[in-house]
Length: 429
RNA sequence: GGAGAGGUGGCCGAGCGGUUGAAGGCGCAGCACUGGAAAUGCUGUUUGGGAGUAAUUUCAACGAGGGUUCGAAUCCCUCCCUCUCCGCCA
Image (cartoon, rainbow, N blue to C red; front, side, top):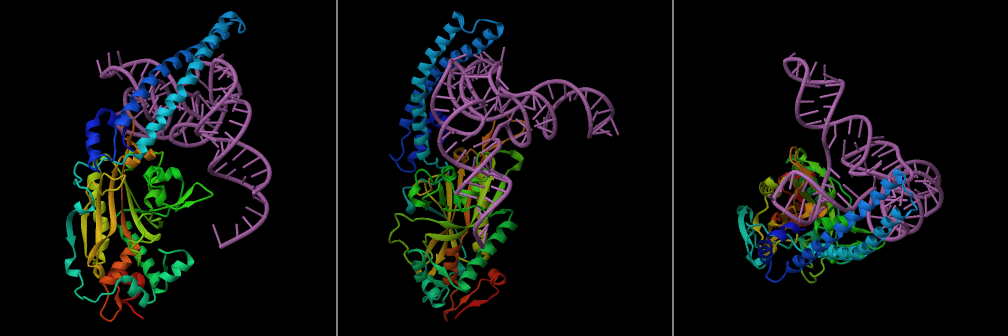
């Protein structure tokens, strides 16, 4: 959520930054107008309230002093109080409606992109920052797509996923299941060693939590809802983990807080019909290890770089070729001010595919979720900055390994760092 | 699912119609005492909105939303959540 004060005080700058996401997409003019009206009303209402409070107190004092509570003097005050009450009954709903409208619009506005976020229309204008591991790109031209080799090896069964659930679900069989588990454990162990505290959070969350992180109200159709309850399947561990500290005032010396969490993630993938219909790339349910940071605003940029490095370290340990993209203003997520995507090399498609997305939300989620901190000596509170990134998406990592480590005989070499976890050197029939 | 209890400030906990943003305690901060510390004493210590350059001032908030009243943490209604016991269950 954007700061209404910032919008009020710097409307031109705010509008300019929103325009970088797309001219004409978001307008702050309506908010400015409503805000003006609301504040004018508030002044009037507050004055009436003040007098009304005075009357209430005065009656109390008079009665205690022995004035006849049924007498004229008291009655006159009561009458005035009643008059004021009528006026308040008129003004209050009006002001409340204005406030609700402002809130509603505010919740629908995306975060302001950072000054450093490259300006661009869509994903074609993302900027490649660096590449790693070119030397690991396989030279064998006959690499089978991961889903095909997975079927051949008997470790991925998409038909069974469809039977049990629906399309875009998979069942992992035997070594496939163990492989998934090995990846999860390896990634968690590595991130814990990097300083993150592991969380195993609820994977059903309430609407308030989804609103805090920004999935609601705008992106309701992207998540699975449990019909009878106010509970949703999480689209990412970012939601429960960020909400761990919702409505809390942290002490500045508790910061920074680093968490990692393995969870399944559930996405409806509405609007991507026909895209990536095969394989592990785009499923309704997938596993992911997520990194989440809560930091002091002064450090959020360096914390962001460090978080990206933590995610990259996994790819490097697995010796998977990848590149880092800095997303442009037209492609960054709703709540992000700045975002790096990590894309892993997928040999069968001869292309890089997103495997991690590392975002700095600045105070956007902190404000929506009311996550604050207090600095001793300073008065008042500040919103924490939140950051998160995948470290990494497990299914896509498995896909990348099934291809990049594929041998001419159709077996899969197990990456060295995974061997102790899987207790295998190769996967074959 | 059935029965009962309860939700108050950073925490514990009183208050059950009148100057209560809220006693008392803990915690925290400052000061005093001390060579320094502990102990002790004193003082201070919620958050958010509005107006003002500021000092300041005003409004709101005792789970949430309505209602009664001149006045509600306190009374009434609805909802949410937590806890205990019973049942069921991985």
